[in-house]
Length: 277
Image 1 (cartoon, one colour):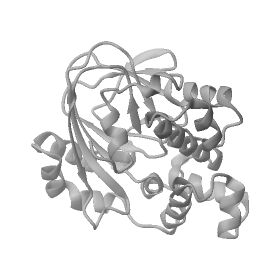
Image 2: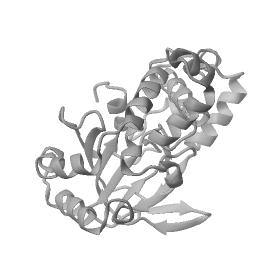
Image 3: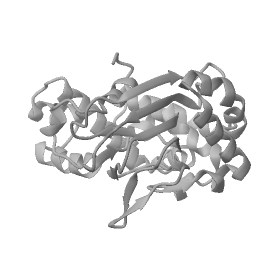
Image 4: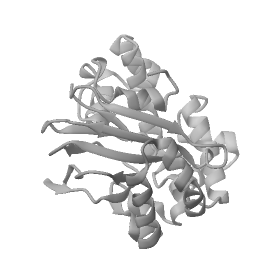
């Protein structure tokens, strides 16, 4: 999940990529400390999921028009819409960022977790969930968390053929080599229905949702680089600028124009795209 939001001041943020034994399923562990304020923050989906381990009081999340306190340890399932959070105190959180195709390692029907914050104990059991949270709270830095928790994560996220098939689809889509479900189906010699089934088994999202999310982030990156909005809409494959604006409201809670401005959590996007902070 990529973060967007207003100017909340400087976040203390550390990012540690996964080692080679886990890099095919886990992108990184990150640690965020932030004093924050009471202004709602918007989280835009990017096709990936994260295990969230709070080291301090969790923030509030808007669920069904009500602000609800997040759990201490949970999996945020695949998002296909904007998510709104509100801090009520200092944030201290460690996140385990899964590869987009790795969600299927946690269950055979990951789509049931879509747009949900699922208590981690419900997915991997109370013992492993408590153990991960304990590692997160004792670790002074993400690298220390890797030392203590890597073996547990490796057991928790087993390999499967579904993950391999999902990875191939996601990597082609993110590279821009194909931008539509029909193109993916032709490239892999399968039906569009098979493409969608593989996405849902690995990522918990439909093929259409993944296509829309990847297109949104390609557009956002171009806007951050200062490219004209009309040109961005055309490059990204939107019908027109109005179409792009509707998609930005759906996925980010803002229009494309504010997306040009630097935000406190742009570091998340920079790391996701492999750029320097």
